[in-house]
Image 1 (cartoon, rainbow, N blue to C red):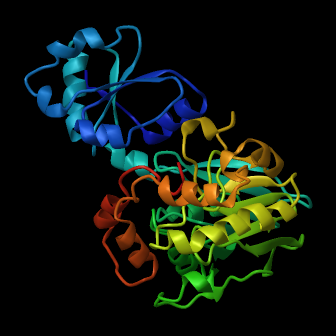
Image 2 (image 1 turned 135 degrees about the vertical axis):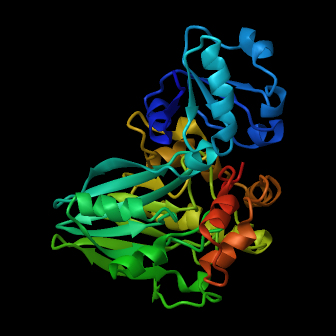
Length: 375
């Protein structure tokens, strides 16, 4: 009997539904410590593959006999070999199809809610990378915000629901993942929008996304209002959609706030970040549902798998929004930063159109956790 594969989608459902799963991760200890599959009810054992080449007898007492064991490696090859040995030893075991590469690239669409005059808001959860992107749909037309490089899922999803993609937006020039916005626009004939203050070095044409822009989607006058909110980047732009949703980009997250240093400008941009969060966002309705471009920890997921919370709740609960002293705030966002994202400079160059890495290079550039937030 051959060992069975478990797909990234199946693991995602276990995460979102808070199911139990025991994971045997056979990557190196450093890779596991840096980035792993996370679930509220998941258990883990990390044993490097090279310690298991001669057999799994040494770890059998550490593995559950009454639960399914999922073996995980970088690209699936090593996990298949280990899973086969565990199957022969009598365990209920499977391996992650495509390994952590597949986990990094999986997108799970989640319906966030309805629009006032008909239409829907969808969130695409990139569970292994912490990226969140969006599709606004109204009367057969769609707009996409902060798309990842896995462009087919957006195009296919729009086709499935009978919507034509008319506009594609990036809230800012991303540094942690490669944008799929321009590629989607080229494939569909949609307009591509980018904040001009983030686009001074780009080598392609785009529509200038500026404060006060209103883009109508469909016939129901669903307007997307652009709100200039610098801080994470100098061009960072938020969106108020249907007077109901606040797409905050990488300025505000559910559990944290955006970091201002990915262009080497932390000291210069920290004042912009505070202005955006403490002045501009304070002027908005607290009833707006915040939809960020990333999430940091798995606990931020709601029961339906979405990542969303009212702005008023975040002003009450998010520590980054409750620092009265400006100097204390400055220290938090300039001194308390996690490591830079993997290959972030190369990703910025790619998103400017200056370099064109192939598919394998793009995948390698994005490997690792999301690091867009202040700790």
